[in-house]
Image (cartoon, rainbow, N blue to C red; front, side):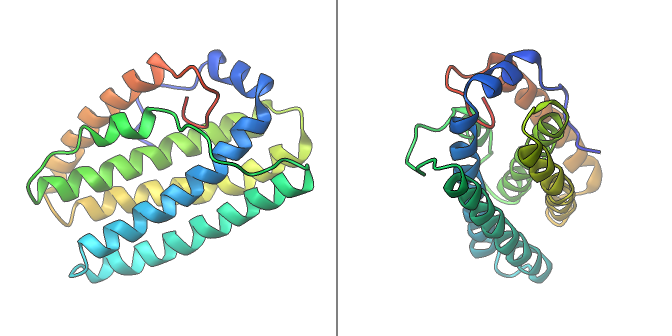
Length: 191
């Protein structure tokens, strides 16, 4: 369903356990970036009515999630601040081909893989966190991340035949798994 080639390992769960505050702050930033990605796609492909409609919904939902995470931070007395992001998103974006329609396909599939990894990580958090409030919170977000992933993959098929889209998704998912396996020294949602 999520087209991922790997599962989150114990290394990341250990990072979360030791750095829950940083993970929460990074999560807020991730939601904001996800809204920005959807908005940028809408501007780039304005002629695609279905894409624009779907991106509007995703922008609204991601911003709602951003504010939900900010509220959790506020309740816990954690100051929202800038922080160095993981290299995950940047490394994935480097894989995006230039020239249309390949660029559209890759932009949508990369966004979809990021949503898929978020979904998979939320699934880990809802199972492994000791904090009941956070377990419930991540459980509540799980389905929307899976839905966003499916939307991005479906929309990529507007720009290339399904067989090409799925082959490219397989290539990108393999690269994504290698990026996740390499990890990141900072505790982040995608480290």
